[in-house]
Length: 69
Image 1: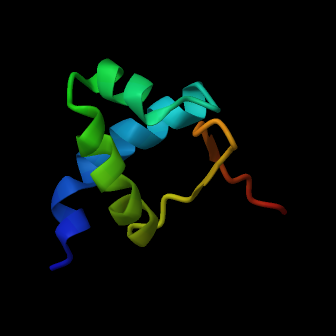
Image 2: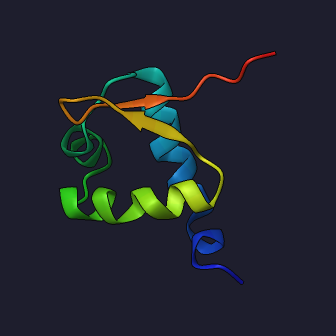
């Protein structure tokens, strides 16, 4: 079982925050969830592995990818 499958609920919470506030920085996500910024930074590669895709702007903000129809 991949590591991320145990954290899927946490990943969905992070994904929901990014979709509600596009351009949000990892430190702000951490504040919303009450965890350390390093926790969010460590989770980002696992989020990608789990299928949650984001782009990062020059200021470090995270943006959800929009799927084209």
